[in-house]
Amino acid sequence: MKDGFFSKYPQFFSSSPVGNWPLRLNARYEVIIEQNRQALQGARVLDIASHDGRWAFAELEAGAEHVTGIEVRPELLDAAEKNMKALGMGRHRYCFEIGDVFERSDVFKRKYDVVMCLGFLYHTARHEELFDLIRQTHAKLVVVDTGVSKVAGNFLEVRQDVVDHPAMGDSTTGVVGGKILVARPTRGAVQMMLGHFGYQVTEVDWASLIKKMGVNIALGRPIGANNPLRDYGTGGRTTFYATLSEG
Image (cartoon, rainbow, N blue to C red):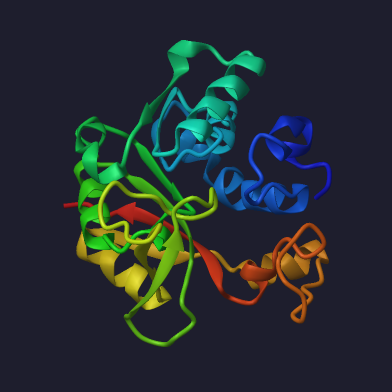
């Protein structure tokens, strides 16, 4: 997968240090974008925690009509704007909003066809509130890519994030000693919460995909450039497709 989508746009390998390894980004592209290409055609998309614009750009290239991104970190929003400009993306096709998701509920009052929640769910403890906001968009498809607790059942594993690290969560409330409380959900909890708000949920079979790709996961080594899919391969991260039930 070295010749995947992001290999054509190498600026995304340097505009943020978070998860920027080519194999990882290209594999995630296949799951997040390629498998949802039909739903993205002509769609209005909300990209939650839009980071450096990598997924907003991919969504537009896949056929989305317009993408709205919301991002709390100014430096990442600036990187996203620079990437879009450098790649010649028309300004009328996207907008990036600055702010805490939970303080910008106005963004969720707009109508979207698709909502992308990529790498954010396990960096907050306000899951019910987040899914309620998402449901208000009336989006027919929600893609959730998240770290998960491997405990069985419907639970939330409470942790702390260091807010000055770009890979972790940030907030305007609840920060003590430079840290915030977050919660890593179990698979069952994600499915239960989405189901509560009217979504039917399927989980991507990452283990089969990684096997098909011929990628070896080094269990004894940390995630990194030489082990970029370790979290997906060990079940510590996964992707869900949630479709809004009729009626």
